[in-house]
Image (cartoon, rainbow, N blue to C red; front, side, top):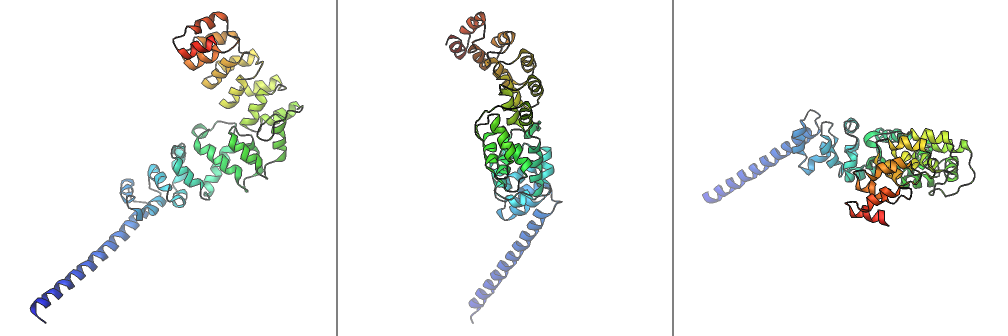
Length: 329
């Protein structure tokens, strides 16, 4: 073999050895990165860096030190790991609206069988649906999980009864179709006029109305509008913390002044708008709404046939065209 050939062979052997050394170093680096991605003591900032590698994202999603925003990003592709991350329930307790802000993450979570803690959380939130739930109430997280629970064959019948009386149309429709939904709840809602389970208004007793009001938001809304609801029950509903129930009560035909007063003094804009549209609202409040700074509120009260003529003339020259049109037509 010539000297040149020997040199070429040595060079190739050296290159092969270097490639093997590089490959071994890369394998060791990858293994270290995997261990680092799975190590709960890894700093959050470092976990963000590691998550840039597709090969490490699954491990980062399962790491309890992963920050919530990164965890929700990873949930889109690695829902199982993120959902079973031991830190997720604590992170959501600190920021319960986070899932509502991430529809893709929420969708990925709903596509898997959720862990027991999450199922328990949502069942507890829906079990007393007429009570306030802070950031959860009405959130995408709350509503979508209600729909999901309504379709399950292992949702407790008592909870399905609550879901049948949800304020949210799709939720109560799905729950009413669930074979495990309590027949007595469905019949009670039908009796007080729910259109989803079948609109019907046979004579109802005060006891039935009270039972319907206790079912949940939708039951209480229907009772608030039911012509046979007794005054003492309406007074109880006026003390509800549910904006949906108060708004329904504010829309009640023939609303007594004694109930209109506390509703008007409350903090809810949706309730004010319902009162502004109700011909039974005391005139003093209609006059006040005609002077309100809200264009929408002035436009609403301008259409109210009970608004006194002087205020109607005032709104007919309102700076806002939509208010003028409402007052004139």
